[in-house]
Length: 481
Length: 145
Image: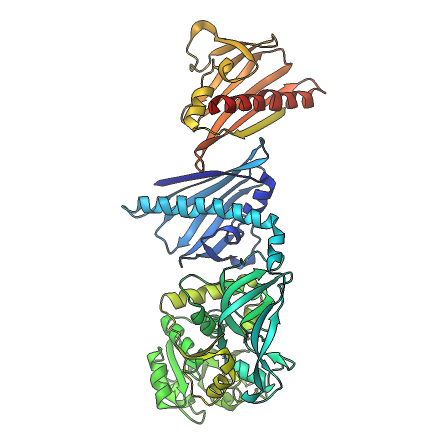
């Protein structure tokens, strides 16, 4: 068993230090080695038994449970439940003591744990130096920042930037690159210098006015990645210099600098590039919730993925395959069938006229698909009902051929139906960080491969839209400001 | 029961600090208010149960008994047997905890006692500042030189 103890004196009153440390989910606000963290199930962060789920910036993933918390003794004890590091029986205690001489705080941090034989020194150093000593410095810096609020005013002015604006609803020709100003972040806001912007089909719908999400002239774009310039009051989870990404309304991502609500912005792990994040946030988080939250896909289930070679389709095929599902897809050409197959689709059905139900039933011994991922809309409603297994689930996450006119006769299959939208799944920040964290892990371990096949300068957004609408693109499209 | 707690960071290696304070007969060496001290019965000063009998510079005599001494935990505790202070059931603990960041200890000195009603505040203040903090200050001074 290894025992690690580190201690330090923090030049702040014990009340101030304890206010931070008693919050079991504060660690990623002040510890320099940590990425995103959330409390599982949204429980209060001072509820004994709650679990924090977090990533280290080196990509490792840890879940820890709060075992004891005492406001009287200023003690917090917690253990690791599971981690991607080979540490067993890790139990740690943080204890603060009041140093009456100078009104300072003594902080003792110690733990016991086990690691594989021969790796004791490595882990004793990792924990003692990387986690504990790094944490002391991080908290000191955090407390200094809190008391130096005027430092934020250094960037108080607006920053000049460029943005792609839809001057009216219409074709790609309505897009124009304009000089604009990104205002200083207000309370709850962050200002991001963006290095990669994702282009999605939803942007085309917004530009055309099919989705009334803007009032022209207004900038487009739902997802991007970059670096934090500064943050407004009350933003505890982001710091200037952090690499971040987001996928959320309102539109406005087609810009070199953007000021926006910080709630929907997540910190990127070191090993996820900004370009990958910009290409994967919207489609990848959509895939995550469709396979894990709308329904929970289980090994052996038959899953029908429409537009299997499309942006979300390719990700659904890969991740569903990794979950052990039997993946059936529909595509419009042999080329797309090859692409889908290369991404985990077991049975791509080539169909130009939305006829696929008979084939799906053939491939499933007549049972049909347990889950249908449907972005097609009304054109395929009858075929989908025919292809659905008894008690199956039909997730209508898009409607490329137009909205459904009437509810399908689900009684024919005891089917269930959902009409899920990503932004409802990510509205709650704890759930957002969980979904984003799972996406980053899937990108890291190879479950998902995201091909960024098309890069355009920010000013060429209209060309990107033309290529996207003409189906000349495959994989992801990004703009590089 | 009244509780008093005083703590400080002593800027010297923990072993050096402990070497000073573990000597139950060493108060004249490192506190500013003890004139002389001896261990009753001539027993060693680190024998648990021994009694130190010391005279303050203002003339008062105090007898204290060693209850705990731990070189492992850098901790000792003692009780007052007799004193002019007017305290009953007085038990004090002095403990060092190494601060790894800086290699110097955090010293904590606490006491619990009973006293006549109305004297609580005065006694607590006097012990926390006049005795414990004053002793820490002179210890810091001593180890700095």
